[in-house]
Image: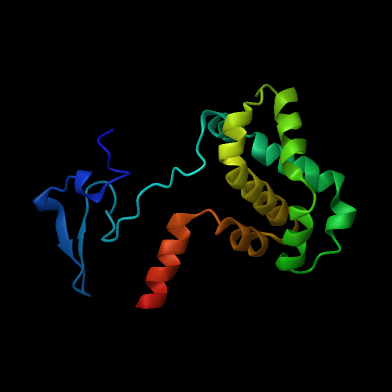
Length: 158
């Protein structure tokens, strides 16, 4: 409500909740720990259309349906790279948009164009998770997850 997800300086900390870790980092408690590294929320690709399909569960449901409908073909893939390449070639977006339309979320073409990458990546990641568990999910998901990428960069730097 106060911009805490967008700007680090919008976050208010009570000095009484300050704690210094054994490693010398300052963190703040009070209902959880406020990390010492700020990563703003990534709103790239977020549109009303995307929020509607995400909040309705249609992305998950379509990915599961797609997996079930194509399970024999999907079983051929033993590694994430070949599975992702095949999924990229399947033109998932128009099929998903038609599915969403039949399930209560009408297409808004201008917003779909803005959200296209996020939708495609999420569909591929969920389908890969259905077939290869998390070892299929995260290698695809990281393409749109700024928090994950920033965390990996930070961990590699220490």
